[in-house]
Every structure is written in C-alpha cells, then in structure tokens.
View 1: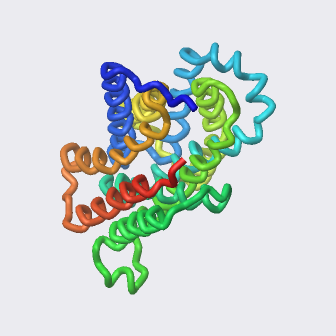
View 2: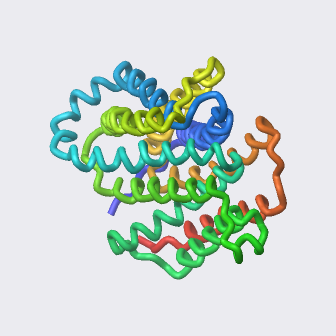
View 3: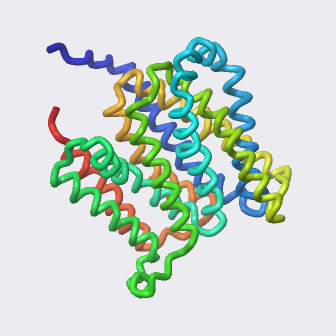
Length: 304
C-alpha cells in the first residue's frame, strides 16, 4: 500500500506557520472576549461577529457555496445541527463566560476539548481507545478541575465553582460534540461547508440577541466594542479557518490537529501580556496537566 507523500521542507514550513498562526488566533479569542466586557453585550458580539463573517464568506467563498450547494442541500439537517453546536452555542457561551472568568482560564479550559473528543468518538462510533489515551484524558480533566477550583481543594469540597468556568466547560462540550460529528461531514470543499455553516450561525444567533434585548441586557457596541468585533470576525472566525484548511491540505489532519494544543499556551501568554492577568501557580499546574494529558493521548493513539 502506498503511503502519503511527505511534503517538501518549504511546504511543511508554510504549514507550520499557518497552523501556529491559527492557534494564536484562537488563543487571542479569549483575550477579545475579555476586551468586549463593558463594550458590547455577549450576544451583540456573537450576532455582529457572524454578520461580518457572512459578508466575508459571500465575497470570498461564494463560488464554493454555489458549486457545493446540491450536496449541502441534501445534508441540510446535519449542517444546521453542526452549526448550532459548534458555532452558535459554543460562541454564545464563550462570550458569556468571558464576563465571569479570566482569559487564562478560558484558554486552559479549551485544552479539554481533545480529551472530550476522544471520549465522544468512543461512545458514538466505538472508535478504539487505548489505556494510555484513557489515562491522558483523565489527566487532562484533572487540569480542568484545577482551573475550576482555582487550585483550592476547599472549593472542590464545597462545590464552589466559578460560573464562568462552568459555562466555558459546557461550551467546550458543545464544540467537542461538533468536532466528533465532523466525521460524517458532507463530501464538499471546506470553504463551501464553512460558508453555509457561518450563514446558519448568523440566522440561529438572532433569537439569542432578541432574548438578550427582551431581558434588557443588550448593549450596543461602543466604538471600541466594534473594533473588538471586527478583530473577532477577521482573525479567529475567518483567517484562522482558512489558515487551518491550508495547513491541513499540506501536512494532513492528523499532524495539523496537534497544533490546536497550542491554544491554551497562546491564550495564557496573551492574557498576561495584553490584559496583565496574573499567572498563578495553579495555572501552571493546570497547563502541565492539560498539555501533558493531551500529549499522552496522542502518544497512545491506536496503531492503524
């Protein structure tokens, strides 16, 4: 059986640059979420973010959408469900959580997603899991617990968990579920699929912003808030997706997926540098547990 061709060093270098930039953009999203506090309400960020992304989609990917529409239309239920889980629900909870916890915590908690994906793939598809992967997932979850209790065992006993951390963990569950079902994605171009999902995300975020208005919690973005929303739409929402696809196209999804593990690292660094958030001892312990658990899970992958 033939093996995939190894990309030349120059191509691999471009892939590493694309994927590292992707991880940095996604890590920066935690900082953008914190910067939006007091400048725009969470659902305002969500709906205007997707509005700007859809404009970019219609400008740059409309040809892919037209070509892929016949296949996408036949799988519209899958597309809508996946967009709600991975885009609308995840981002809605993400920006609400940003009002109640730190950017460092948000970044580290996102590190739990690969472990949750492994568990979800096993329960949904009976994907083989090794004991080393199980241990890795448990170690990753231990890191999540350390973040949730702020390194204080007393909070664990009293079950006193910051609501922002709890919401962020639920958001991670939604995104992990979306990642798991990507296994059954329609056979279309990545840009065509992303374009339609972005449109669905915009439509399904409208009820959320209407609810926020009815609860008298909607805040129209300030000038600074609009700046944050533009950054969110351009970098983590659009460019990161394009860079990730380019990187995957060069070195494949297996090797590219490892770069997602850099998201907690970039989020922590940017939170300290940009927001001057304190990096506590428990943050370091949690990051070691999360990244160490992910590394163990990667090492323990079943041989194919």
